[in-house]
Image 1 (cartoon, rainbow, N blue to C red):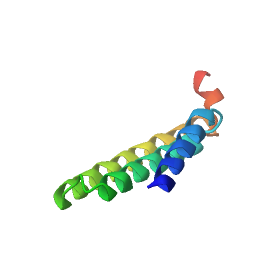
Image 2 (image 1 turned 30 degrees about the horizontal axis):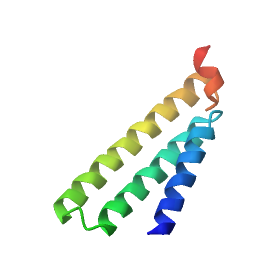
Image 3 (image 1 turned 180 degrees about the vertical axis):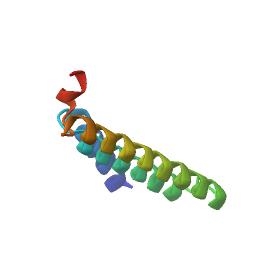
Image 4 (image 1 turned 90 degrees about the vertical axis):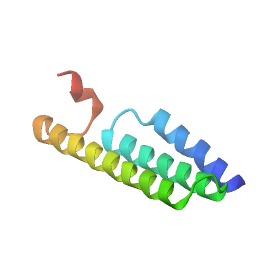
Length: 86
């Protein structure tokens, strides 16, 4: 349990400090969602159907983030956040 909380704080630190590349931000968000899922499963808070719904929404969120990343790279040529304002 302590390892999950340590990983959660590390994931939040990486998410808050990743301000250059969008890919690193999206990966840290996916890491945080998987940690949240493991925390909910570990605490026996989720039933099996809720776990499948949560994972389905997580996959849809990841696919949406990846499509936004691909369209950003196609339009600007890079995934750096500083090119979003141009």
